[in-house]
Length: 160
Image 1: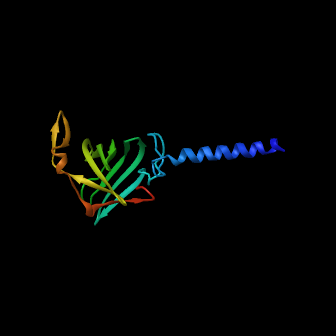
Image 2: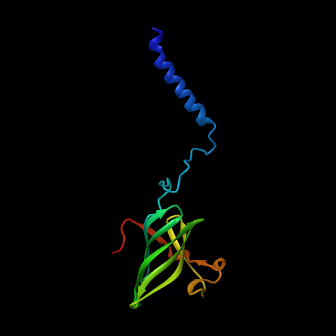
Image 3: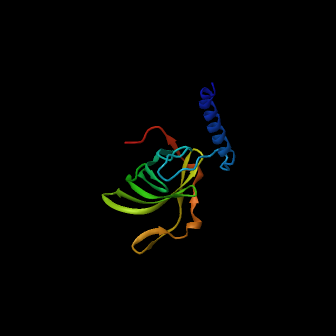
């Protein structure tokens, strides 16, 4: 009869050990994630669109690896040339800082872009730029202004 209770006792000891080891856990129920894991928060991947009168801006985040992010950007301004291209950069402290390579007026160009994460999407940062070592950079990153009224909101579908 005692041999039949051995599996029950083993199970109870295992359950008690598991419970005891989790009691000392100080991460308040949050799971630590490695750079190749999926975040439990709303994922950054997806499309974000702002429509301001007749102008449209789309930020599409297509790849997230740790703090490295890639995607595409479309600026479709009314009665102005459309620019379309790709970006790659870093997401740190709720700010996406990237280099945007795009085509506009038949010419390929590049410039820096900044987007700050807000509750329902992103807002773009604007500031003075200068050329440094043949590349356009923000003159004073601390003076960047984020236009809250032009928020790019998350959408289910991307523009073609």
